[in-house]
Length: 189
Image 1 (cartoon, one colour):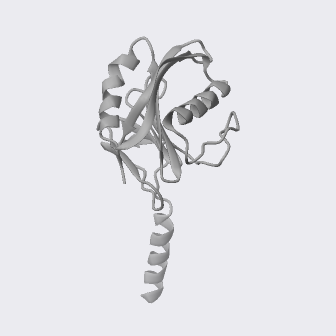
Image 2: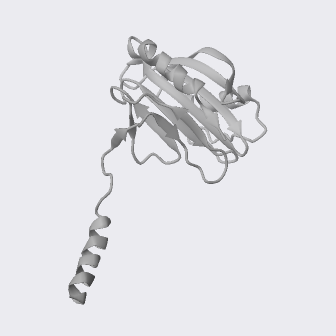
Image 3: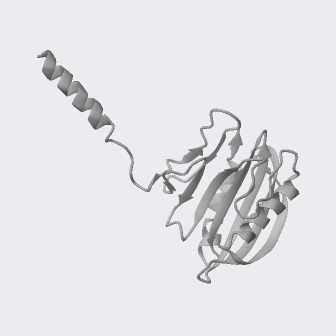
């Protein structure tokens, strides 16, 4: 009897390791929370019918109709570490307009966007923190015209970039209000 119980417990323990979420995306559940244990924690509401990509480290990638049609992304930028494409560095004391310039330079240098045009750049308060908001247009590698809103701010010892991107022709305007609502509900604690 005791032997069977031991075998059953071992099997239960082994099978528990086999139960995990392998799907590439799942429901956004109406919210995003960075869940940081250390440093600033950011949260924002998302529509219940949006999906988020699994396995995104230190951030969020969410969509309603597909990642090529519209996307809201939240990512952390570590001050003091070189950015991926320009090797420029975000520093803790940067003003919002300086942060915008460094992040846009990195986007330009990434090779993914062609003909980047800045349509609007202005200061913005994001979750009660001074930041920036920039609207840009560009073409992707296949020539599709896209528009994006890129927002950023520095909180304590971390910088955050929040982006909404969609094809310029239809989806950008259709889902911009959804992004605006999510951005308005942004909280930092």
